[in-house]
Image 1: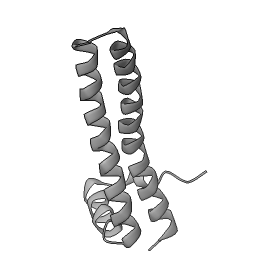
Image 2: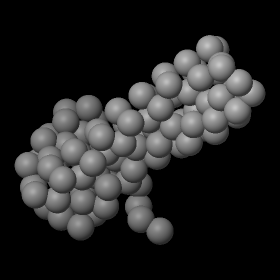
Image 3: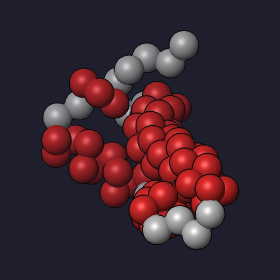
Length: 95
């Protein structure tokens, strides 16, 4: 298991690590993908709430619930993956 080095850094060190990581090609690509995942999750939650609150039939309610659950998973996974990747980068590139 990876050590939890990222969580023990100060705010300034985390900010410096993020700027350093997001300048790499992998970091740019990962940031774009995770941002897209986060936006998709928020839009899915909004559309799911719309389907639940303004249903035209019963299936809209079920679809809204499923869409809301999947969208919440998208948002949570986007939030959880960022520190894990930063921690892996920090461990791999020791200075």
